[in-house]
Length: 199
Image 1 (cartoon, rainbow, N blue to C red):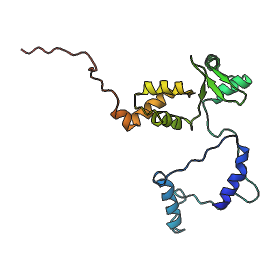
Image 2: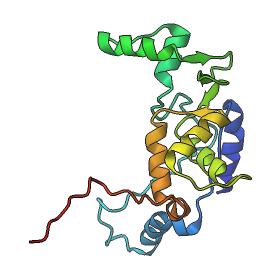
Image 3: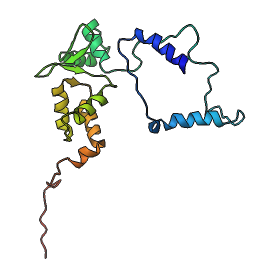
Image 4: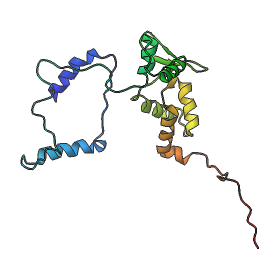
């Protein structure tokens, strides 16, 4: 483990931004089960489709190569490419839609993407930052457990935006126990009441 940590510390200065996430033991059960399976099984018992063994360590002495380009697709990439380089998709419908949507975005000198609303600019977040922002806004100093619409407005007022924000917040509120407990109860029926005449 020490060799991996040493290589990580040498390589970190190449990145502008990085995060280190700690996965608690109770959420890491699959990796624990795989490690236990690999250490407890006899060599004859291992089925090739089940366990993959590394014949040499991932970090070799003397060099570590990391592809620093975007490893995952990010919704911001198409807007950044258009605003910085003028790059448009091949499809005319997609390029027209991108030009119309890109009018609401701006790019600063650090290549940070912002979305314009009626108020101040909102920072466009990537996939990894949205959960933290939602938890911080909902459970921060001004705790409130309201519905999804209220949380969307709070996120925008706080100065954040991401693609599919409404859908992600609806899912976040649906999974939140306290949001469900303290949500207003709708007493209006789903449809008009029908009169039933008794004979």
